[in-house]
Image 1 (spheres, rainbow, N blue to C red):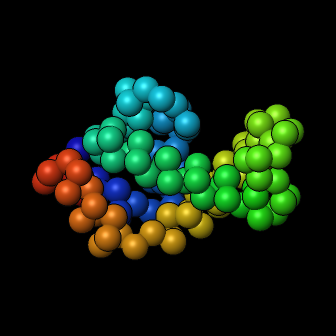
Image 2 (cartoon, rainbow, N blue to C red):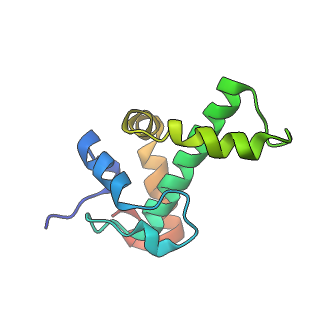
Amino acid sequence: MAKVILSRLGKVQLKRLRSDIVLNSIFISDYENRYGIPTENVCDFFDGFMDYINEELHQTWGYSDSDLPYDKYWEKHIWDLDNPDKLWEYYMTIDWSYYENSLKHRYGDKGCE
């Protein structure tokens, strides 16, 4: 299988990558994927995606972490935003040169895989 790089995925590959992982999992093994992209990188990427859709919840609905019903609201609506279009929208916001340099700093040369 050809080496796949996180920063060079197409929309279909990104959708498949999302289907491979357990979003918001605390277990690194839940980020293993068909493309062989290092689990740490995939975990970091999807942590960013969770932040992205969480921010959208804040902006769209006006809830904040300090609001008492926020946790129940979050659990109910966060999955409405977990969709291929929103994932692609997030993917397109990333400055990949910065992201890859950050991964290299954290994980060494394997960071950009």
